[in-house]
Image 1 (tube, one colour):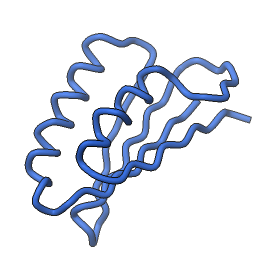
Image 2 (cartoon, helix red, strand yellow):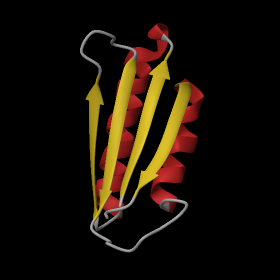
Image 3 (tube, rainbow, N blue to C red):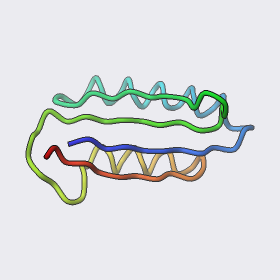
Image 4 (cartoon, rainbow, N blue to C red):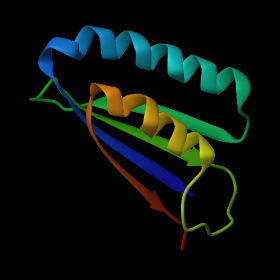
Length: 89
């Protein structure tokens, strides 16, 4: 399963967002096994980010993980978040 979170933040929150997301990723990696997470910033638009969470679980799911939902909730304070879940075919 792959979960994606596309985030569009207000430009004045960029520094605060980057500090907070760094801590969120560290906390996730310290407390959760079976997941990998990477964050990307858009090349020509510094207020757009993409987070990809991969689960080693091959099980098909409909709603996504609790982890993905928690991250979505945390990041909603910074701007618009589009959250989607993808299953391996």
